[in-house]
Image (tube, rainbow, N blue to C red):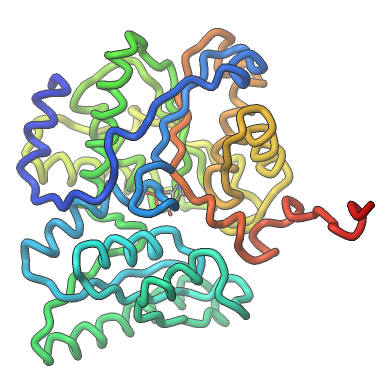
Length: 354
Ligand SMILES: Cc1ncc(COP(=O)(O)O)c(C=O)c1O
């Protein structure tokens, strides 16, 4: 096992581009704690920067773009859905370090106008390619990859070096960013003289979780990591997360092993699908807004919150436990298409007119 200081020293061997504002705040949610009967903290990675619309991708991008800069890249290509937080944050981060952002975005919702992240992508002047998905998400993702490869070859022929970043920044290098996230949280908990019984978070590509798992493999401890899925996953998902965690550990030369026993997946709150809202999640978003004045989003953090609430309300998390909710950002989704926000956007201004 490593101390936080020793683990940070290993992580320090990777090239890193400073982009965010760290440590992100960790603070107690007094009113929600009282309501739920637990000692609830929130880790504000929604506050990471670069702009007002931060999120979990910034930690990953510090390493991904750190490497791109070290290799003398000129452009950065990445992937996502049309409302991808990762794509938007990559565009912002690329601009911050003088790289040209190029985005391949799979068209999962009806995109008639540029709203939310797509609006921000265009504001950042990203080269945006929308990839239609008439034959499903997987086929469209494969096509996006082929188009990006062709664009990369073309740019390299013109003498411009290109960094390719996978969807969600889900590579061992991106994952290293959340080894840092785990170590930062551990250090904050030490300073508060508290040990979380649970950390809840959303999981999509799985690399945020993989980084947290890798960090936990390094420092040990009793904290249970619970990750709420935002989409259906096949049986190999937990193994892929574990492999990614171990690849990130190998990258920094850590002598520690991640295993599937170090985390729990909650697959009960993603329905009906990715970027499709459900009522439990909308209720959780309203609860956080109305109890604490904080925002969650319908695609990721709302579903994670719904998962956390169900663990607490069912007694799976016992009363009096110390719980941390890792807020991974995503609030721009509140300004996206009706398909994504569902009944959250049901306010009728006509009805409210006096
Ligand atoms: C707001 C938000 N939360 C959580 C996640 C999940 O992170 P990961 O893809 O690393 O599992 C994402 C990823 O897209 C996200 O945008």
